[in-house]
Structures are given as C-alpha cells and as structure tokens.
Image (tube, rainbow, N blue to C red; front, side, top):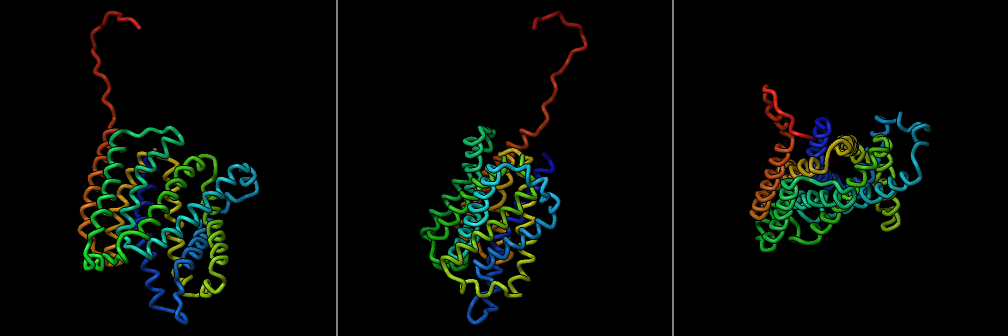
Length: 334
C-alpha cells in the first residue's frame, strides 16, 4: 500500500503540471511558425506525444510483449483495452486540449476535481467498494468548490479574466474539461481492475499506441492531410521526446502502478491535491494569476482535502490492543 501511494502521488504531481506544459509548448510553437502554421499544434502534440510515450513504455516493458504473455490475454481483455484506448487515450485528451485552448489552465485543474466524488461513486457502482464517510464528505466539499468557482466567475471583470489568461469567460472550455474528466475517471476505474490481470507494460503501451493511431485517423478524416503538414518538424519531435517520454510515459507508469495497489479512497485523497499543484504550476509555467473566484473555490477545495486527509490518517492509525489483566478470570462463555 505504501509503494502504491508513493507512485500515486508522483503521478498526481506530473499530471498536475501536464496542462500547463501543453499550453507552454503550444506557445513555443506559435513563436516558431512554419509558413504561418504552428508546428506544435494540439493535434500534432497529441499524436506525437502519445506515439513517443508508447515507444518509451515499450522500451521499458518489451519483455512483457512476448508471444507467451500476449497469448494469456482473452478476447474480452483486448476489447476492454481497445475501448479504454479510444476513450481515455484519444477522445479524452483531445477534449482536454480543446479545453486548454478556450479557458485558463487554473479553471481546468479546478474542474478536474469532479474526479474525486465521481471516482468514489463509480467504485461503489461497479465494484461495491465503500469509502469512509470523511472521504465522501471531502469529495463533495471539493465538488462544491468547483461549482462555487464557476458561479462566481460568471460576473468576473475583463481585467481579472485577462490576468488569469481566460478566453471568453465560462462555457465552451469548461464543458470540454468536465467531459474529458468524466471519460478519464471511467477509464481509471475500469483500468484499475483490469490491471489486476493484464500486465502493466502491455496495457500502457497498447493504450498510447492505439490512442495515437485512432486520433490520427479521425484527424485525417475530419481535417485532411494538410492539417498534419508539420508532423515531421524537428522542433515538434525535440519537445515531444521530453513531453511524451517524461510527462506522458512516466506519469502513466506511476499512475497505473499506483492505482492497482491502493483503495478508491487513496486515489480520491491524492487526486484532491491535484488542483492545488495545478494552480501552482499554472502560475510558475504560464504566469497565470488566480482570480478571486478561483481563490474562493480553491479554499473550499482545500477544506475538502483536509477532511479527506484527516479521515485517511484516522483510518491508518493502528488500533490499540485491548488491555489485558494478569489475574485469572472465571469462564464467561463463548
């Protein structure tokens, strides 16, 4: 359990920085246009990042791709892996990139906290796994913090939106961020059980490779070949070696290694720290200044984190053995 939590917290920190890193990479591409095109566009970034991540994970886990290991997987397991690769490996990241293009990263990381109550709910619906009451209260408190943030931002001033790097207020980007989070949480809960029987190396490589190829096929069908004209740009692949190899590959390795070893409450508690780290990374990497609404909502989310952590500490505290007496006692029955 201890190693599982360690992996989980490493993954949370990596993923908390991911949205800010993506936004920064797109800005780098905009500063280095090729015939007026951004070589590090969201589409190029998603395809190349997933492909580099798949190759990196394959290099680390190639032994698990032996014919002997592959033959142990049933048709049902391959179908589940394919469904997860299409949804949480391609569609959800595409939605999240769309959200990054239309709202502030701070807003996105706050909205992502809906994964906390949703994860606990799915764990109960799918596997009848119950969490302690403090985890549930903390999760609902975090959800209330997100709702508060969005409601208060409806009347935000243009000056505060500009400081937070928001585009057009609350709406389009927030919807895609919420939809992507729902898909990712569903994928995490289903994948958590699948990882009990599917080797991590096969699961992670297949997810990224199929996700990359599926997204490329959809992109070519919808936008055409010209949309990926700069896919072989050295600038793109130079940055993708870092993004795909470290942020995507290492983050997924730590995440999957963690969720297969811990309880739903552990995932909810660790995930609840993600918005705090995400806001910090948004400030450090992008220079985003939190709006008053985001600070108020973040405070409510922090209260939820405190409640959940308090409950986890109480649950992990060893129970004191009953006090025994050295004097002989009369038989009291069974």
